[in-house]
Amino acid sequence: RIIRATKVSYDGMGWALREEEAFRIELVLFALMVPFAFWLGDNAIERVILFWSLLMVLVVELLNTAVEVVVDRIGLERHVLSGRAKDLGSAAVHLSLLQVPIVWGLVLFG
Image 1 (tube, rainbow, N blue to C red):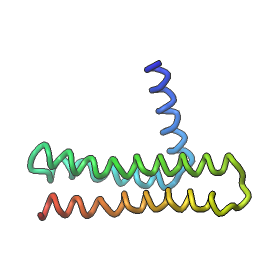
Image 2: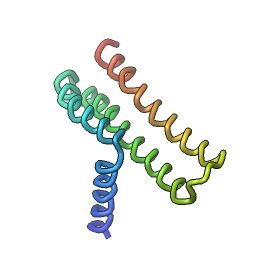
Image 3: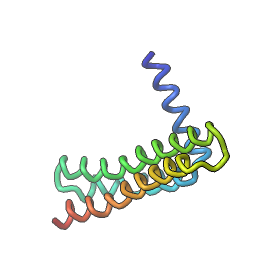
Image 4: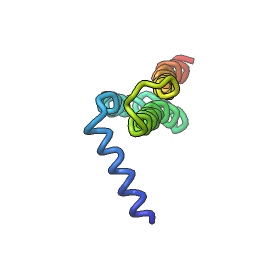
C-alpha cells in the first residue's frame, strides 16, 4: 500500500509538471529560493520556517489544481458554483504566495 501510494503521488506531481505552467513556475522559484532559506536562516527553526513557507505554495497549488481538474471532470459548461470553486482555489494560491514575503520579512528583518 505504501509503495502504491508513493507511486500515485509521484504520478500526480509528474502530471502537474507536464500540464500546469503555474506549478512549473512555482517549482522553479522554490528550487531557486530553497538554498537562500538554508543560507539566510540563523538557526534550524528559521531555516524550517523559510523552507516551509516555500513548500506551502507548492502544496496549495497542487490542491488548487485538484479542484480545477475535478470541476472540469464534472462538466465544461459554465456554472456559478464551478466558477466559485475555481475562484476559491485561486484565492488560496494567492494567499500562499502572499505569505512568503511576509514570513521571510519577519524572519529575516523582524
